[in-house]
Image (tube, rainbow, N blue to C red; front, side, top):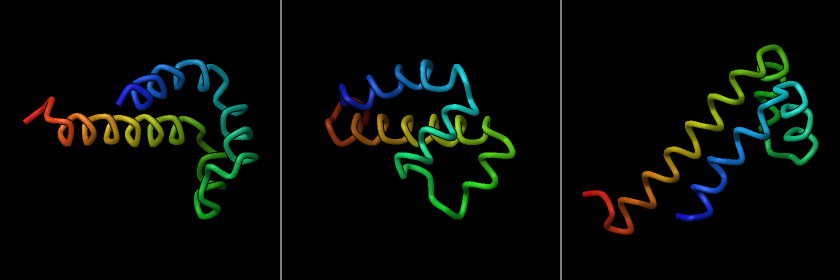
Length: 69
């Protein structure tokens, strides 16, 4: 859960330059090939999807850990 929270904080730094974030995440293989064009065209979509995924992960871990019922 701490790692998910840390990742949520790192998103702020990662997306200071949205185009660079797309390039770096693509280079690391973190973007599904089916979505690369969409994210290159509008990098803010990648930021939104990344934030949603991390939020979902955090909430899921909190529920499983018994912090949220």
